[in-house]
Amino acid sequence: MQMPRSRVDEILEERLDEYGDAFIEFTAIGRVWAGFLKLEDDIPAYQVALMMDALKSVRLFYNPYKDDSWLDKEGYTKHGKDIMGIE
Image (cartoon, rainbow, N blue to C red; front, side, top):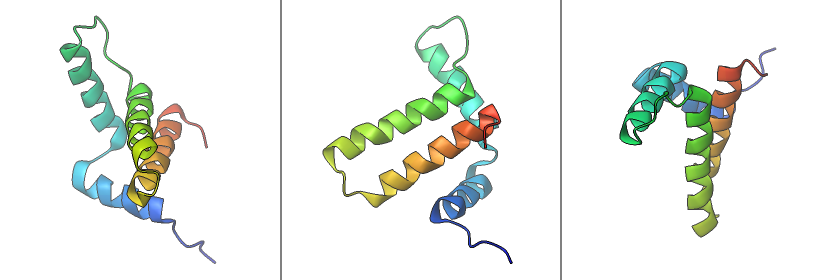
């Protein structure tokens, strides 16, 4: 018997269809951010996931009732763990 998918898994699948692989996307974001900040090295994909999670944390600080932001935080954590090969 297959376990029902969580809402976070559903959202991540939708994002995969819309934006493509998270590792590839986060790697590209890390390159762009590093360029904006004039860093010598790119920001690694797992750090992008952590920073996106931090952004959602700040939003939740001001509006902790926003379920979408809680779901997004879970998604960014899942992406970061996947990128690092942690289950």
